[in-house]
Length: 179
View 1 (tube, rainbow, N blue to C red):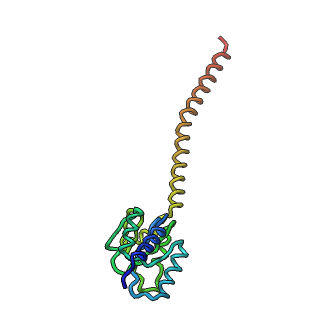
View 2 (spheres, one colour):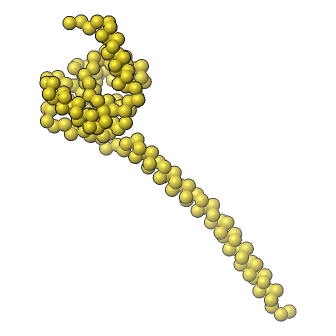
View 3 (cartoon, rainbow, N blue to C red):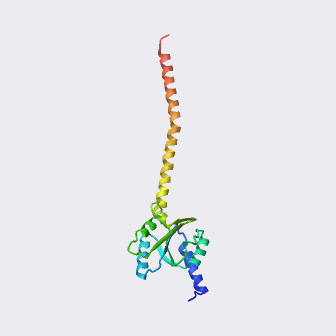
């Protein structure tokens, strides 16, 4: 049965809405999955703060381009469903890799902005820090560097103060000595 132009337009709008604010997505193949299995994957994705939806590849590719994501056509062939997250792609990846009770679920790869990760790279992606963790690490590094800089700038002043004190102490000793 052919998809009507109106239905395609509705799909496209839905995909754009799904991709609004998305950090990234896991691309899967769902061939042979029954509704019970798809619902189990959806529940797992929700627990990780994401969503899992079957997509029509050609329309989804157009939406990806519109939102500035990479469009890996090789990942988007066949019966495709995507798990999309607005916040934590590493966490969603870890959850999707952990789904062992749905053998029909095939993880094909991931898209994160302009970056594409193939299936064999998903394990590494799941170990990346979250955006909040990366920000905290960066702030810690910047604070440490700033503290070291203040310490380095204070050392010459402390040295100069010590030298001036020794000089004035010596001058006072010289004034107090009998001539």
